[in-house]
Image 1: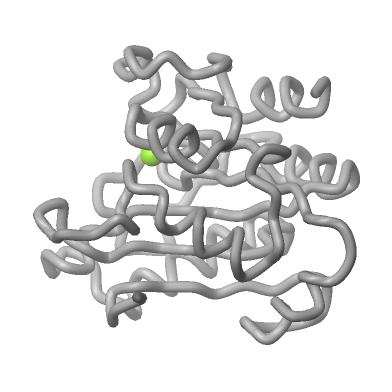
Image 2: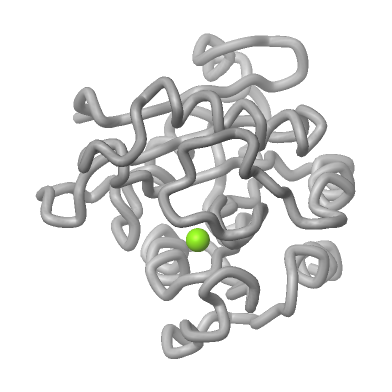
Length: 199
Ligand SMILES: [Mg+2]
């Protein structure tokens, strides 16, 4: 059950919002790349609440373009406990995410965020796989054909629990988080995309 701290927003092609899920569920299961956001697609900013601080990594938009061309949906799954703790207002979260999506040239197909505090009893917050489970259900995704990319052990644990292949990027906190034994380790989002595109 999604509570008030559950978040979803997205579009595929020119179809805005959540209503596209029925359309996407037609045909073969989709494959996706699930991305952590902070430290993976953009430079880590502790509790980022200002769109002026958003710096997407160089080459990230091109990665998403190539992945989409290869048939992947690009989906962000992000913990945002700063919302629960009051460090980030919901409006600030949306302003930051809008800027991330803008810098990624509109190539993000959907965003799932979890505003819960680490103490909340939730499987949405990573390392729980709840946000991926929601996307799988909403968008008709086959997790076995999908990937999770992130800079923390919790991202790898989340992807593994959902049945995805996993890549740890060494950006953000990645150099401190290799204990989770990801399927691959990449120096950047660009390297991670190359691994995925090689299959
Ligand atoms: Mg991160």
